[in-house]
Length: 302
Image (cartoon, rainbow, N blue to C red; front, side, top):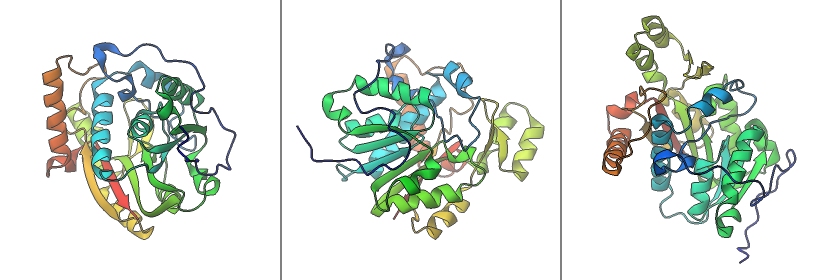
């Protein structure tokens, strides 16, 4: 049935694929977990993710990625409670975990990524969805920096920018560009590396030089061996206020499982998995735990 919805006007590079076009993915991952919880995060080519794709693919299905996606999904659902049929833009959508989940929930989603492999994976997953879900999600090839020119002001009710800012030298221009796209009352969802907890990971590994460096700098090397950057909540709060999208709420992501080995997988026992996620969920919203989470999920409201 025609919903009457049309995606916002697109003035950027050519369309990668329309919903429903593309090949299917391989079978579901081990343990019955949602394979889209194993998202490969590929930000704009303007960042420095280039070269990390292979290492990331080797770690699909890991516990850390699974926890991240599940927590972010819960947190988004909480913030979107009572909001139906929202227009959503997902910058750096990767293989489409959050975009697909939001489309399944009845929202109209535009996912953008500059990496053709990531978009191909997302398109394959979309092809397996029901027709009504395919009709609510479009996938486009593009760079998040240009969205302020490709889409008009107030084009979206919700904008996601997850795992992208950490690869940019300065987050402020991207945040300002995305804030322009928000309609009045719209939400901006940012997922960033937590600078206030930057020393914890190297310290847990016994790398004291890197731990000491983390007290003085926002730069670090992540587990993929890539140079990246972390943000402080206080600094993001200032930036968001300046673009008239002040912080509405914030969560921590991965308090207990961030130091899990790269090859650690989610528990196969359903009860144990539920308890693990509940513990992470409680920590994500409870001080002082959320203050030392590996990632910060910050929600601004226009």
